[in-house]
Length: 296
Image (cartoon, rainbow, N blue to C red):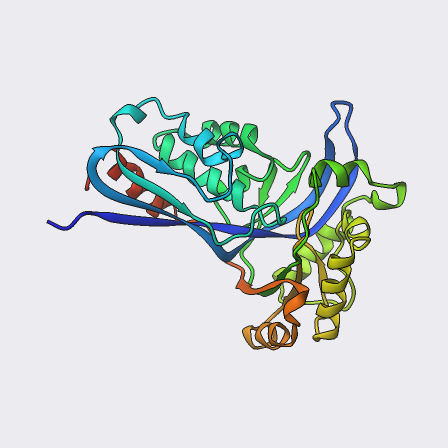
C-alpha cells in the first residue's frame, strides 16, 4: 500500500484599507481594516511514515518564533500522533501578508480538531491579531478593535499585483506604530466605504488608506516599488498590513498580468494573486484525522 500523503493550503491576506483610530489605555491600538484572503498560500504537507510524529518547520524561522509549533503544542494527544508534517513557505515572511498567522490558524485546526469556534478563536487571538481571521468562515471580514473583532463580509472578485521590496525593517510593526503622527489617525469610515465599493467590483483612482504608508514611503526601496506600480498602470496602490509589501488592486486577471509584466525586477518580488473565499477546512480535517491514525 502506498504511503498516504495529504496537503492543505494556508492562504495569505491583504488589507483592503487599514486605518488606526487611536491608542487604547492598555497600549494597543484600535484599528479598522478589511482582511481579504488571497490565492498566494503556504502549504502544509503530511506524509504517513508509520513512525512517531515529527514536525519540520519552515526554513529560516527560529523555533521560538514559530507560531505553528506553538499552536501544535496545544494538542493534548500529540504523543500519539504519527507521520511527518512539513510547512512549505510561499508567502514571504514579515511582509504584511499574514503568512505566519495563516499557518498558525491551520495548525490550530490540526491540534484542536474538536474544539468549538469560540475556543479556537480564543487560542487564535493569543497567537496574533490576524490569526482569528484565518479560521474563517469567510474569505473577507471587517476587523475592528485590536483586529480580532471580526464581521464576515460577502466574498468579492478581484486581482492583486503584489510587490515585496527587498528590505528588512527591524521591529517593523512596533516601530511603525510608535512612528504614527496625529495626521495618520483617522475615523475608519473610508475603509468601510471602500470595502462596500469593492464588493460591487469598483476601483478608484487614488490610494486605498493605510495608516503606515507615509512611514513606509520614507524607505527608498518601498518608495521605488510604489512609484513603479503607478508607472506600470495601476490606479489603486497601497501597502498590505505594516508592509513592506505593496499591492495594486484590479478587477481582471488581464489587467493584473499586464501590470506585473511592466514591473522592473529591481522593484522587488512581483506576484499575481486573486481574492478567494472561505478556507478549506475539510483539508485540515483530513490531516488532523490522519495524524491520529484515522483514514476515514
